[in-house]
Image 1 (cartoon, one colour):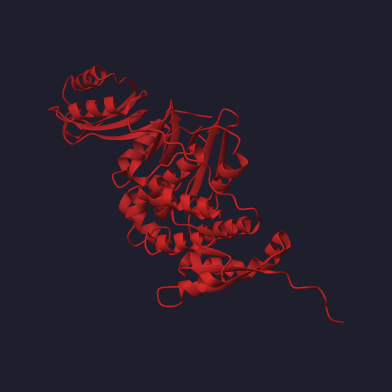
Image 2 (cartoon, one colour):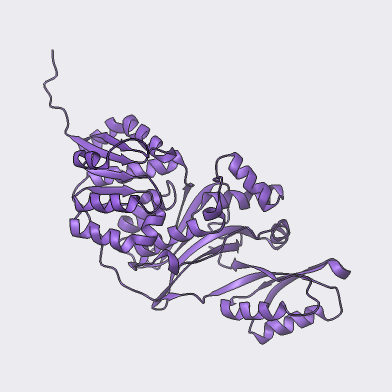
Length: 412
């Protein structure tokens, strides 16, 4: 006997890009079509794929209900995304550079067209921080979002600590395992994490933060000595992104930071990402999971597609412009290579005190020309600390420029 039930209506997805993430996404759509049909009542299917050598964007757009952009970069991705939304199509993207540099234009276009622009895969792999900020915590006043949002650098720092190896050795291992690109500059110099923090700041605080407003540093300068002293001081090192309210302004920044063991991000190792959201209403929530990668990012993209399949569309809220602070308070780890002469420690302490920097702990090693001083300071304005280190760098007993890394003193 034949089945007289009607076939569910189709939901047609146009896919732009068929690299590692695009290919994984296409496979997931086929694998999970039945489950998605049961959730949404619609049958998802790819109606076309655009690559560098094949496919026609206009033909795909004409057929599609939704466009998934996985090309990366700014152009032609930006043009395709804007044209798709203006044509009334929902868009899902994992393109953090596009969102962090042209978010105002993209969100305005989504609002005007009353379509959804979703981007969970752009920030932290399968960690659902975008959805939590947009939906679960929509009624909370967020005070701070900070976390490990780059799996490549987290793997490198974890391996440097675990194996006591150099940055270059750990990077080579990350590349061998596929955690780092052949050109890892965006990851190891902090730009990738900065783009993600610009996106999270926009979501958390409703402020149009551009990538150019995010102060960022990378991890190339980290040495095995830093890791060894951190072990002595009971600290772990992460590349940390932070977006937080400070009075009536925002601070958005990325930099290496030492964490004490009680911090919720201290134990997150390897290529994992983790994000902590803080609010007076909830205290803090920490989410963690695998960082960016083909299957991980594709899973987040598919989750966005399913959300977009369920009407109604949700255009972005109005943005509120807030000033961006560059000078914030932090504790510091300070590494000094000095000649072992009488009074050197007192001389350094005098300079620090003159700039309002107080010392929490000191470790001294070596003698003669190989002496090293390592200090951890109490929290102070970064401008004060930087002025102090600039003066210290001119002291005669110093054998090399000072090295410093921020220290997060909070424990939960």
